[in-house]
Length: 183
Image (cartoon, rainbow, N blue to C red; front, side, top):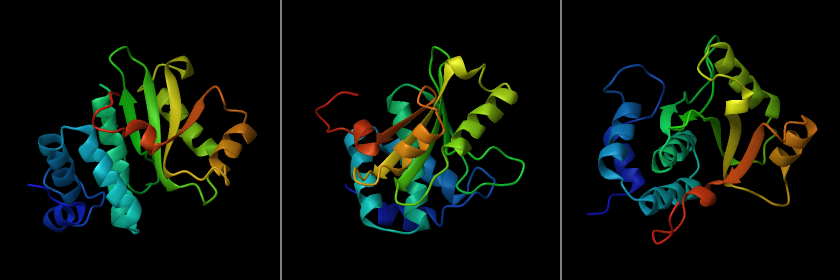
């Protein structure tokens, strides 16, 4: 049986940052863990996210990008959907079995101006909090749903901040390859 993203969201409810184990956010993430075990399924949901606009689908995209980290054998900490004063606002924090850390920011598009210094700040805060040992063991990663080679806004922001050794940019399609491809 195939279930659409829209049907899943109708069942789990509106995704938000409410605390608790039985919130829509946690029900959605639990659904992924229990029912989505192929990268192709994640890819299909990502494509659905990118066809439909709105906060709900932006939040789902963030969770799906983070869920891809599991397929890459990272221990994934999901971030918040919206920043809160006094809390580190990353979208995701991935830790490899070897101790390398990737701090992820998922973006639907790069049409809007994004400051690369924000992601650098998230990594610096995680280092301060001793969640990450240092920059030698870390990388900031922007994952963009609909990259636009004409705009190159994020690439230019990374270059302007002189952070090419600390930050990377990738399209989501790089992670969500076809079913017959291996990650």
